[in-house]
Amino acid sequence: MSDGYDLDSGPDPATVAAGTPEPDIDEEGAAPEGQRGGDGETVGTDDPVYAVGIGPGNLEYLTPRGERAIREADVVVGFATVVEFVADRTDADLLTCGYRDEADALETFAERVADGERGTAVLMGDPNHSGYQFVGKVQAAIARTDSSVPVRVVPGISSLQMAASRARTPMEDTEFVTLHKSGSVTADLERLARAVGDRHLLVLPRPFDLMPGDIAAFLLERGGDPALEALVLEKLTHEDEAIHRFTLAELADRGGGDGRENTPFSDLSVLAVRRRNSVGEDVMDETEDEMEMRSDSETEDAP
Image (cartoon, rainbow, N blue to C red; front, side, top):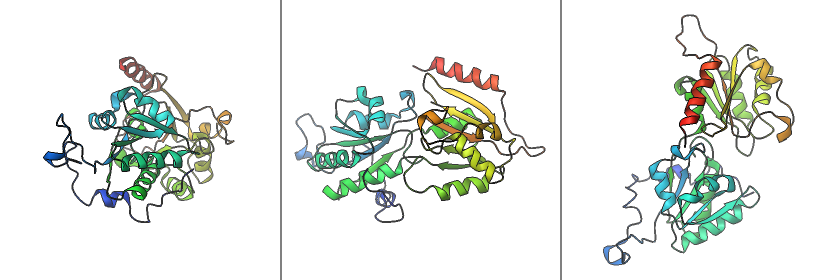
């Protein structure tokens, strides 16, 4: 695994990217008129690297700008499971990696960008919801070879946004935490413990030691109401999307262990815990049958 990225250390990618307004995609990296290719295509040597959130998996949720950055790239890098989703949307060379070889893949990617190739890194969902550590690693790799190349984040649709829609859970009343990252998550768990019952919770679990059942058990230990409603939303926008409804106590019985075989849920899961319904509060709700009917209908409409 490559070295971690501390957002409190500099230079923070967001600080660099926000230094100047982001130009139109056609203007970035534009070479002087006399240095353009024979077909009029821009061939600037300072083309930005794009870090693209590809959405939750169904490519209907890939934004046009993100798709263009992938399509026009010379080289695309990302985790193998992510690159597979967009492989047929580009003729670029594909550099796939896992946690163990991501440092080598990013080094190769950065060297090719330094040689003048257009590079795009791809991440699942939206990098701003989960995956910003990978953005930082891309930034660090690029900076080591050519510090003049900017890294631009192209937001995507996060599974968190899909879960909020499916569970009718407004983000403004929600405590969102991602546990899908390396390093300590103690502070993130404490945020959930402080908010449980008072605010909705939306959580990206960490495969496979902090899955929905484990998080529910932790919340119970910290005083969470066993009767709180908990939803596990799996593989959102995929053909085999599923939504499961429990009480917090029921879900806690489905935790334990740190392997794939110790949980009934997919690693592509989101946990939603509904806050207490105060007297007189207008909270949109659906029966389990209504949620399943809507999910089935949307799956049928998907390509």
